Each structure stands twice: as structure tokens, then as C-alpha cells.
Amino acid sequence: MNNRILEEAIEKAAIEAIAKAVIYIPPDVKKALIEAFNNEVSEASRLQIKAILKNIELAEKMKMPLCQDTGIIMYYVRVGYEFPSFKVIEKSLVNAVKIATNTIPLRPNTVHPFTGENPGNNIGRYIPYINIEFIDGDELEFTVVPKGGGSEYVSVLKMPPPGEGVRAIKKAVVDAVLRAGSIPCPPTVVGVGIGGGSDIALHLAKKAACLRKLGSSNPDPVLDKLEKELYEALNELGIGAMGVGGRSTVLAVHIDYAHRHPATLPIGIVFQCWAIRRATARISRDGSFKVFQ
Ligand code: SF4
Image (cartoon, rainbow, N blue to C red; front, top):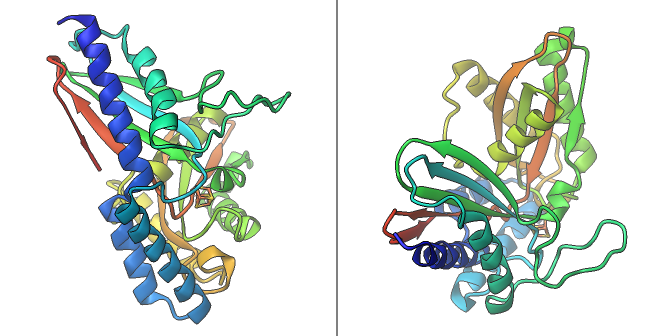
């Protein structure tokens, strides 16, 4: 397969995935927001969720981004060992962000951390951030996540004494949600990454918050129980949608873990705002592709 054809196919698929992600909320998220609306007892919080659902409907109708905050574009890539070319992947994914910024259009968000200079195309050093995993097969699959800044602002890394165990995890999550208040645009998904090192804990937390489907159960029964317990506890805090007071503080708690060093218990906590934007593209070795949510 000619590399140029593959490069064009990846670029096209990524532009389509970015557009889908920023305009259409995934069906599992819409369902969770409707359920939150139906279960909410606070009138103020119900009004906020109603406005969110209206916002989603208008974005779909007008084919416009559902939030003005483009976020930082993240790609989670899974590439088969037999995929014909690895060389073209990064270039195509970066180009797609530049093109999508102009054509959709997207608010240019990325700025130099010291000078504040904005290149105007949502790219920059290490951005879009591209995570690559190798898998069996000959296909390329990637999920694009425009990750909002408000929810990122309240991310937390805790390193409690490891002997404190699950008690420390529960405390860290409850404290983080209380401290975050309205900042991450609730109702949020709280991603919790346990173990590994500091970077691994935060990486797992972000993946859990942004990629895992709402309504899915944790395959580990112990973690599933902990997620449900935390979900109930967090929705008793009274923060509510957009912080106006109510039950709808979180849509879900998603936990993942890695084995850890016996001397450390890293706890990464990453929030995903209600505007959960993700779309996946799957590209075959002949360059044909489909984009889905
Ligand atoms: S945190 Fe999410 S909902 Fe809030 S402004 Fe940013 S992208 Fe939009």
C-alpha cells in the first residue's frame, strides 16, 4: 500500500473523528445525562441539566461544537503490528488537528506555557498528545478526545502512606470532588488511577475518565463495588450540576490500577466534565475507514 494513500486516509479519518467528537455527544453520555435529569431533586440542578441537554441538541442541529472550549486534543492510538506503515501516523494525526481547527472551526487553545503565544492551530510541543499502544492485527484504531481545561484544572495526584490503603483512596476522591466544586463543569466522570508511578496513576485516571463508556461495569468486582460506593457518596455532597446544589455531581466513578512499588500508593484523580467528547476511527490496511462513537 502506497504511504501517501494511507497518510491521506488517516488524516481524513482523524478530521471526521474530531468533528464528530466536538459536535455530537456519544450516546452513552446522553443517556447518562438524561438519567441524571430524571433522578435530580434540586430544581436549580435540573434546570442546569436541561440547559446542557438543549445545548447538545442545538450543537447537533447546527453542526457546531457543543462547547467553546476546544480543550487539548488527545489521541489514544492502538496500532496493529501488521499495519502497513507506522511512519505516517503521527504526521497525519497532527495535520488533521490543524485542518479541523480551520474547517470546523475550533477555538485555537494551545499556548506556550511561558510566553503565552498561541500558534492558532491547536498544535504545539507534544500537542496533540499521542498515546500509542501496539496490538495484534493489521488495523489502526484511534480515539480522539478534546479534553476540556476546566475539568483538567482540578486534577490531583496524591501519595499517601501505602499502609492507609483503600481508606486513603476514598478520602482522596471525596476531598478532590469537594475542592473542585463547580470548576470542572459537573456532572463529571471522576477517573481514578491507582498504583504504578505518579505518571501511570494519572494516565490511567485520564483514560478511565475519558474513554470508558458510561453505564459499563468494572470487570473487577472489588473495584466495581468501590466505584458504586464512591458514586453514591459523591452524589450526597450536594454540589449538583454546574455547582448550583443538588444530587447530580458525578455521572460515574471509573477506577483502574497498575501494580505499584511497595513503598508508594500513587492515586491519580482526573475529572471529565459533562461535555465528554470522544470519537473513534478504525482504518484498514487498504485505507478504508469508519468513524464511530
Ligand atoms: S470544562 Fe468541559 S464543559 Fe467546561 S468549558 Fe471546558 S470543555 Fe466546556
